[in-house]
Image 1 (cartoon, rainbow, N blue to C red):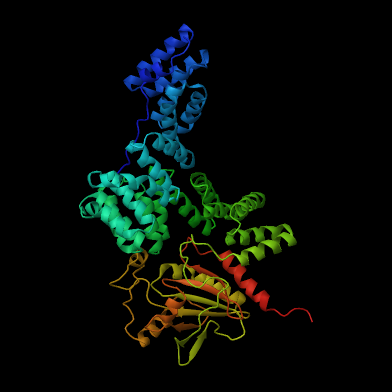
Image 2: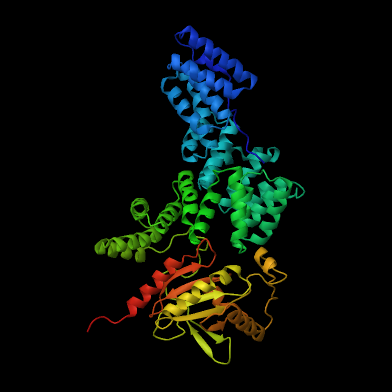
Length: 552
């Protein structure tokens, strides 16, 4: 489903009347008229060249300049069209300005510069509240910029038309979903959701499931929608995100590449593929994607942070420092940026600045916005529980498997692809720091048990386990997992009541760093886009350092 688009080209005859001024030189006028003829015949490249020739003779001809912008926009050359519209607007008479502003807004929209398009479209909506197309485009801008509440403010006054307007119903339903108003979303989307034979119906169904957290079902519905109509807007982007949540970042990267081939201005495809590539230390590939993500959504603190981290990976410390300093100035309570800036200052030997940023990082708990934002936060006491060991008899106490030491608690199951992929890194840290911190695997409920959630990775790797029906079976799974992943640290088993999993909000997989006095100092999901080995190592070093005795 494509959002309705305003006409990209403004008819030259209309603008000629609106922009009439002193007659330009005869040669320029002749070239201009030839350009109009070519434009009306559909030869946009020829028309653009004639307009350029005309403007060389008469640079003040606003009609020629505006029509040049329209021809370039019609060719998809929006970055060239934008300055032509901007220059035409500087001298345009009042009655022509709405046309030019509309075309400039559309050029911004089509080129992905939504931050620039939104105010122009909002102004057009305010001037013409009955202009449905401008309203829908403005609302779509706001949704893509992460402002669903503002989008609803535009759409709810015309919500009564949604029953007979599929495009309005769809974008209104998505705005409700992204605002957390699932009942309203279901009411508006219900006619589309019932049409499960159509691409749009499967798309809407997939989006509803995605928003509710049912990612496997979302993945299947979105895959059906792609089969029926792969040109649906953002379809591969949401499909890729569902693949990430079901533990298949390789397939997600492929989906994001398909999205970017169709629309290089999809924010999530740029941001999420950039972060995955950065986590894989493919910084040269990640950087341009993250640069574009920042351009598309300049108000995303996470996009700015990811770009700075890519620069750190490329050893471009000056660029990373500037980006992080700008980020913490703009979002002073964004703890992760303070933590990364502290590392940059440490490398530069700026100890006072490093200490300040470390204090700020500790002060501000991680913001919502990561892939997994639940569970006990840094600074909170870690939940206390007693679990059975997976091998032999005996119990182990959480949060500290070795009393008096800091702890690194890893929660996961063998059917979680993200946990299996992170295991070598966790093993490495265990070998490196195991004498100073207690490492423990807490084996929890299967992430993708047979008959429940299934992962495309598990299907490819033939990983199949039924849900554990007894503690003995769960202990067998944990022992098998430890053996197959060659884990160098012990494991314990969560009860069938899933008490540890729930207390630590740990499903499907997670890692916590706990201080010697039982306080949470760091937490991260093991999903590839979120798992940051450098941040985890820094947290482990921090709790070990805090425990070390000072000079006597």
